[in-house]
Length: 117
Image (cartoon, rainbow, N blue to C red):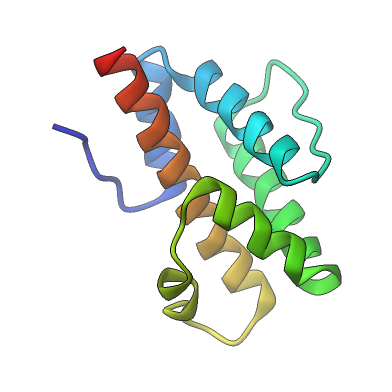
């Protein structure tokens, strides 16, 4: 059964222990590329640095180009209803929540592909 995690760091630590961390990064890059959003993930990258990079990228998208952010979430398959349920009024808080949602969905893709391919 697919494990659930309360935050991004625990999710990424589990991905590392399952030897799926690099596949998660590759899928993240693919999804960003499909949304036509450049992202540079230098390797090796620690989980906390990946979370920071993603949070910063999403913050900039929220502030500068929300439509690209919505395109990304459409490509990753995160429903708009989940976006409407974001808590907090601060863009930084929302970027943090969005990065967790994004990582969680990408983790599902990678996990299922690994288990059932």
